[in-house]
Length: 425
Length: 142
Ligand SMILES: Cc1ncc(COP(=O)(O)O)c(C=O)c1O
Image (cartoon, rainbow over the protein chains, first blue to last red):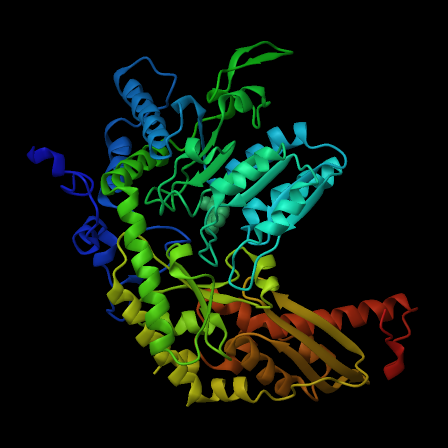
């Protein structure tokens, strides 16, 4: 059918591989150049991904053709908006193989999802002396909300340490589980080291110790196949904007029984069934957690992003990015004398490579690369404790996505040699 | 060539002026820019309302280190009032290169840290009875 090819990635029915060169035309921003006329070399996808036309058009379509509130209007465009919004729930559920769309709660981003769980579930289930186990590699989003919970409820935090290669030390995790934590929360893929954690095994171990598990999938859903049922997770969170979707979109998935037992996080319109002056009855899930008018356009865009990714096939996405990681780990040390790389081997790594040039601050590295149109992140990437663990003030980070090609890693190597040259003269 | 990384900026970065520890500072402060991990400790010896000596330690990017090097050169021998009156624009002029908004914090960390050090010193003096004598021993490490 000819019209199958109008949106989203083209033609791969059973995609073993994806073709990054042909799908680059789906991303209009890749045709732009910087103030010096250099084409965009975007190596900061872990911060936020670029958006394909299918997503841009989905957002635009809502704004142009059926901009209206959801779950309220009894007229054509409002019904269309509600339909598109709820269709996203189905798509997102399919992307992570959630048992039912009603278990998908829409939020602005992964941070909001974790805060929702921390406030609603945490404040009800974490008591004096209770332990939450986290890891040393957590993004601040999966650390600070738990700090607040244990401060308020008088609980404790424990941390799974990592090896110098950036791998979680499961033998210590095992010991920490003897503390009988109420909750274990960890990232599936590290945004600084790129480490892909053995989440399935870790969930099993946590459950055996009687703990619930929250998985931060912000860096996983865009890059590896995720099946929350297979993982056995209890809570799973991710952001739309890192998975080719718009900013302002994101999702929490949790098992129905958990969501049903949790009190609302925010209160207002949409989340209630009945309101009387002195009491209200909560709506059913997921609406109980979706107070107020959401970012409808963004969420519809996230649905388009989920379609796009499923069209590519997450196995193919993973294979492509693993190849890029392997290529970067091979090319950068060879082409850039003295470069320090952090994190594990390519087999255990997502498309993330953090590095330093000796004696040169990563901000200076990023600034000089910017002249060549190369975008990398410099700083602590919201993982200050992890940087402290390695005694680093900051790192530079290159991160990849479906549209990244090896030539961009070559360009990075050339750019880094130029940085070294400027500082050496 | 990259305007931001002129030779003299890199020279100040590689061989910063006034880098080290002051024996008996009357004012000191550790400033940081958590976003990039820049960290600077400014130490000043103020006598009779004049900055007699100044030194700094720390680590950070070329911009923050060069700025500290240039600024410490500049304020040595100035009165406290003169230093306190310095504006971000004065520092940017000292650095002499165009700083993008994202790097302003790096460029201005040194001035900010000096200002904090002097403000702390003034507050301590006020607390210890307002004797505005400039004796070096007046400002203990509170
Ligand atoms: C591992 C991880 N968790 C959580 C987050 C937070 O995502 P957001 O800022 O979209 O809430 C990020 C984003 O950088 C991340 O990399």
